[in-house]
Length: 198
Image 1 (cartoon, rainbow, N blue to C red):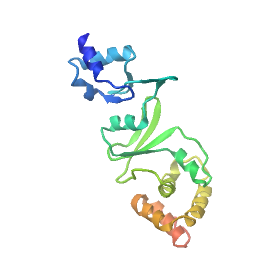
Image 2: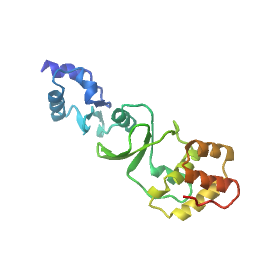
Image 3: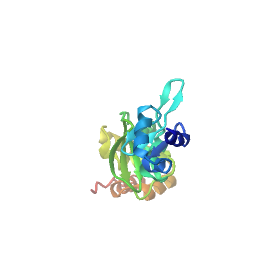
Image 4: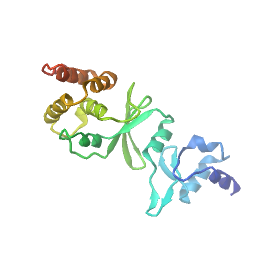
């Protein structure tokens, strides 16, 4: 059992590991991982993805989204958001969603990691951190995913856009907006009727 002990020495509570990260510490990695999962030392999150649970006074804490996605993508470059973030904009969005969006350079598609739903969306560019301006642009980019009255949201976003720092907003539009979203904001901010070009 000393080989398993050796492997356990490298595990840190709260960390997410790929099978490949751990294979260097074990001569029979699959057998050892199976044993550690059985013993509750590790949790299997998805194919080849394991979590070393962190104990809190409320029981085992789930893995942090950032760590989960970093291990899954094998990459530092991503941005996690959720359509719930739009609810803070005051434009009438109020639905609650249980899916997170992950903008990244590598993967597209929906994945369930540790029982949580992630929608990976390949984007050439995304910000390091959120801002009201970015969220407004992002909402219009993702309008088709939202279970809301879309016309009403568009109207409210128009009003909000006119009250915001135009320069900051247009910078976000030019950096992160899709073609339809660009048309929308250019129409709003240049005082012309919004073009519905599709």
